Amino acid sequence: MKSVILPAYNRNIIRAMLGLKVEETEMPIPGENDIIIKTHAAPVNPSDIAFIQGVYNIVKPIPTVPGFEASGMVVNAGKNGSHLVGNKVSCFVQDDNSGTWSEFIIANIADVIELKDEMDMDQAACFTVNPFTAYAMFDIVLQRKSTAIIQNASGGQVANFIRRMADENGIKVIDIVRKEETASMLRSKGASYVIVETDEDFEEKLQDMCTKLQPTVAFDAVGGNLGGIMFNALSEDSELVVYGGLSGKGLSDLNVMDVIFDNKIVSGFNLMDWKSDIGKDEFERISLLLQDKFIAGDYVTEIGGTTSLENIVKGLRGYIADMSKGKLLVKP
Image (cartoon, rainbow, N blue to C red; front, side, top):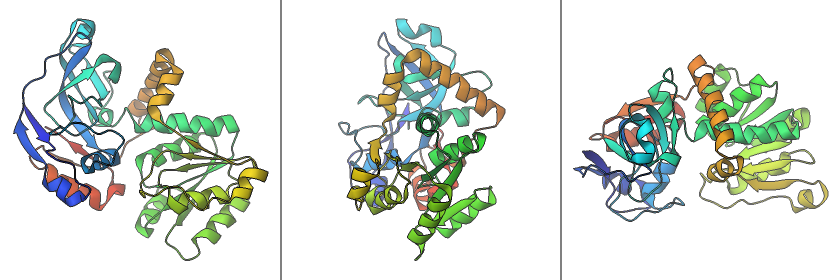
């Protein structure tokens, strides 16, 4: 089978991409808890970019096959996964011996989601991480009975899902983006409160919106001083939820007095911990609920383009140049 191979990590993203190559690799043999998936599509996520740079929290022995998410058809299985053969699945794999930028994937049965027949397979390729992340974090909004929230990286997919969930629940969203082009795109889709972090009066605009809307939850995918600015703008008894570090910088410039006197807190969100905490039955219930949303067209992951294994470098260049266009799908 053909697979994309990463021979070495490199913090320079251009060099990391140029090092990628396509090679013939051995077809994996499933253990008793494994399945073999014929790949339909595997998305490129920011985590994948961080991975090939060697700066993600998962580092595998090299050479290795990149890619964590995918959708496909189960074509072979060990004895405990035989009931899945012939079924459509979505998967998230982190094991050293597997990656999704490949014609076939080996995955543990615990790392796959069985799909309904009506589920679109391109959408299913991006199903295991972002929709569940948005669902789980939005539950914090509901528990806090928030009437407004702040989020950054608002051109991204998690932010898109959160905005949709907020709309369903009548909750206002203050969206922060890096570029005016992204702001215009969001406004054209109905976003009401969008601000550009590079504007000279950004902090003033944010504070004015927060004074008006009184948000009590903020979602930070960036870190650095932007997270601090969002935290400081929140109302009393609020929570900043950190779920990403796109800036590569530590959280900074938080007002200590807000922590002491205004009962404001900072928390972190990790999808795998959440999944473990809620248990298998509850996760399956939520999976079916989210699949129904996708099948009905209520939720959609924006797909910006596709690439073959052989054109992975060209595809990655386009994806990195403008991630707000949507996911890049790798299709063997």
